[in-house]
Image 1: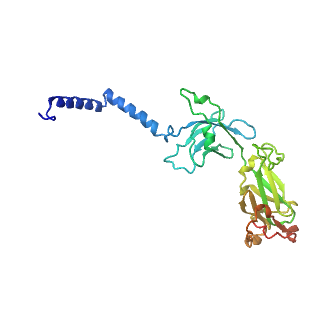
Image 2: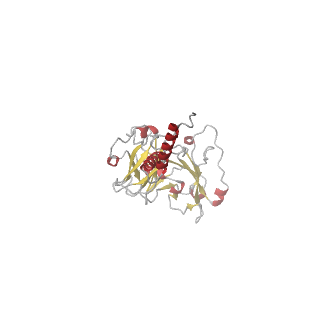
Image 3: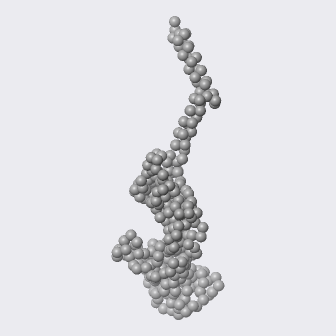
Length: 314
């Protein structure tokens, strides 16, 4: 007798077929168990494979930089720049509660580090990049731990609007290029650093800062952390004798134009529309650094003064 025609084998086939039919029945207990198990596995895999990236809680506290008060309702986002989204951990995003803390997840992943973006209505946006080592230093969640009780592992401080304005006061009648070097200091992590310089006095909420430009057209500016938000639109020019001047000479005979920025150095041109149209920055000599260059200009309202050196151009 062949194995296929064996009564024992046929009996087992009929029994297994009946069990498979019962499991395929949506009303059977076996089918419900398989369905629940599949759902659990799916939930573990779908959210960016966070489990496989060894994610850990990353509570972020957001405070006002000047009042030190918590900012509720701020949007906090953790992402992984320059990484393929198919392999990177999923983006974590949340809003701060009344205590100013948003509770997110972060994973020690990526060559470019972990990006933290913070936005809030009425405030200037902030960004910070955490290294993989900094994220690794955060303790992963433990079994049965209430992570909502964890203190913030990162504090982000935001400045309230309006945006900062830096007013450059040039000598009366100055014409030519201006080089404004804008740095943030001192180094809060190393205040004894030789590069650290004492900050000028400024008031909380102050957004207008004025600096006198030397007759050479050069000014070095050191400001508070607020100056990280300086853009070309933040710069304005004023004559020391209040002679009329405006941006791009839109309403005055003499105007100022922003040219470019290199290594924290902003270059501007002061003159008439015709002088701007004919302006052509001279080529920079090889090996010259920004510290070696300087501005230059003319005397009172058009009378020639010191001529700019050959490397004065931006």
